[in-house]
Length: 425
Image (cartoon, rainbow, N blue to C red; front, side, top):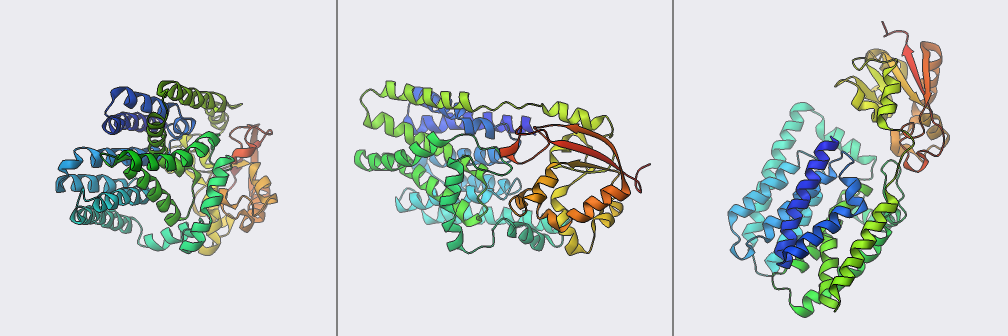
């Protein structure tokens, strides 16, 4: 999965180079812009996290490039193609909604600017809606209670809150990003970016109005940034990793401002490059343990084909369908299952128990976002481990013994391997 992320990050840079070339009409500035983005610490991490953000970002940059390319000869075929790309991204992740809102905002701006017509936007919406219905029908085939379960899943992340409540949280969202504050996702130090982006966002729009934005590109990118933020607000989950969606546009706005307001452009551009590079250099984090070491300890006593209950970060060791993780245990009470019934009914043979669970329980409800509310099943789980399991191995791993970012490598985390008496051979 990390390799897939890397491929899409390289693809994003290639399309971004072409987008910057279209905007600046300069190969040098296009290359410089691409280097800046590629060296950005948040882009580097997003390219290696094996998450969907970099794939959605690829579609954001690609659809923007297609929209800007031959804008004076915009036709319905382009709307269909962009709509297909947005629609296909729905099958990747719900964050495609942010992509749709961002591109939709740029379409609205181009309609107001009389560069395209309302029919272009309506065709785009039709194509996206058709593909969305196809994916929804597929989801119903896989799960008849798809909408109910999807709604229930979103509720715990604040998706069902009112629009006014969601809007009020945008400030806290950016505050957490500024302070690199997150529970389970590592957010590097992006203070510099979060300071210059709003400054140059405003400046670039003023410059584009003063000097005449010939293609309407910079104002369109500015609208894109606004509507991407609107998409984040409408979803209401405020996942810190989604901030990467504005980075390509914001870097272009910064570079546009520097080359249009300063006399010694080259010096300031090189200064920007140095700061981005230095910020990345000092913020690349090294860990005490490698992932290979973590999985090696597990493999000493559990085969990859054994059925286990374990933290999700051990998933890559086990065969498909063999790992059940702790995150869904808090739903069992609603299904009428206690912890023991769940283990036996699922045929779980081993339990990999991280000491982190005890820490989270002590801090309830602060870390309910990691595994849900574990206080619902914690006492049952501890009793089951004591009475119905045998402890066969334990090891220490300060890096992968916890999923809580701020306490990784802050102490030696114990990890225990239990064998279930009922289900083991």
